[in-house]
Image (cartoon, rainbow, N blue to C red; front, side, top):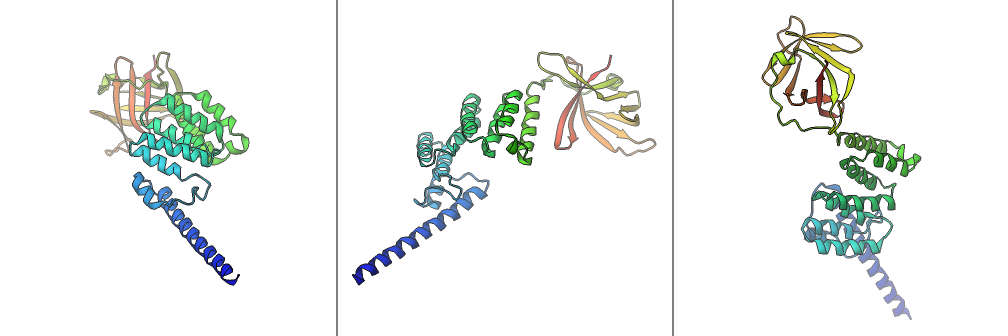
Length: 289
């Protein structure tokens, strides 16, 4: 009886130590896999992850990582096999659908990417990865209504969180740009004579009339530019090739420079690399008749 108890204790210690070793190895691998912006091959993932445990610290099946690496290696059949395994281990995360959506998006298969992103989002809408991926695809389709509905779908308590608000605003703005006309193949340098007009900010939409924003208007004469707003600001300017320079009165050094071009067929003045709050953008202007 005494030897039996000793045997049980030894086996218990052995399995405890072995289990702790595998868990520690798994946690270290998860840290490496999730903490680096690197694509690991399947062989690298298998060398880092033990066969046990099956799930991560956040209850995500580790076969999801193997599936992602399989897709990156071009082994599609094996990737689907690991996704099926991950879905059977935890069918409530809907991460297999997210991975499939991202995979199809890499190859610009937008319809398939949308199909799987919708499954992932509807399955777990309050997961921010599902939310962001779904809105990203909707923005690529120009579906502003779908983005608004997705914001409502996650619920007020979630949608009012700062991360969700930032994602919502970002992709809603990108969706609005979907219908803008960015085809100005005849754009060229503008002459000083062509520039000497009054211009208003324009949003040129494909197949419809331009929408004008009268709050952003300016007028060029031979040597000066007047910017209209709460106050009228007047500066000197010079046009050199594809660049426009602004000067303070009696100053020889410009305080502002911007790339400028002109599309004769669409009567559109184009400002490139305009600095705004979140980066840079292209702005378009129409002449005021």
